[in-house]
Image 1 (tube, helix red, strand yellow):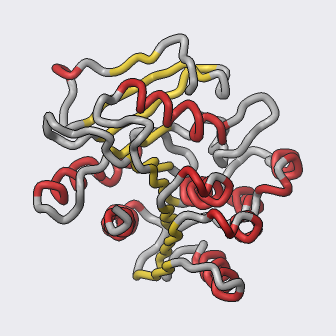
Image 2 (tube, one colour; image 1 turned 90 degrees about the vertical axis):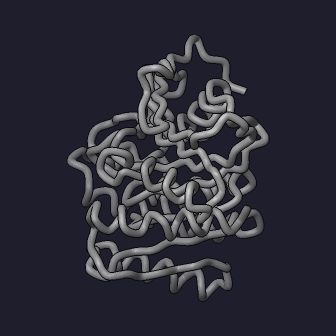
Length: 265
């Protein structure tokens, strides 16, 4: 369990729409990091499942709520009985350049920020969660890459993963960030390909799902990942829908991810 110098959390009487905000000083980031958290309404929740929801490039922890309204969708689906109550954990990627890739960098470890600091900060400060909470992980674009990659590497930590319009290999990040990440990819050469990591850790993979829009520039990469998983007999769910690499697509198809997770409970 990570020990923090401090965890600063929003005061309930000023919160709205079941959203809470956490700032924590991270040894892995070597600075503060921010997390948005959706906590379902109700007073009797304990050990709720946690969905780590990662964002893409040029964004931060707030983007899933303020571009797709996922917190409003979640509460509506819970109220209607479509899904069981779950906590959404939406961290910043660490704010390195246009995007950290959720990878270990030379002086900062954005992978451990997610796998250690974010999870521990939430379980230590959100009383509806605990170390008994089932963990899911999902994300879009660079966040989808982070989700698929971390689920492959830490398969014993997650019940399931869902990638949405995902980058599937670190090399593809070069097309999405302004910074030169050549050295970063070399330093992590053994761990930047999603399919390579899934093959290496196939015996401990969680349930795998991913989707992509047919008009998305990443569709070929997602189809190739699907093809490779089929070729190597790795169970997974792959879906294609109409749409591109847009927040309209991600808002519309967020339910497919949450329903997949709900079915694992």
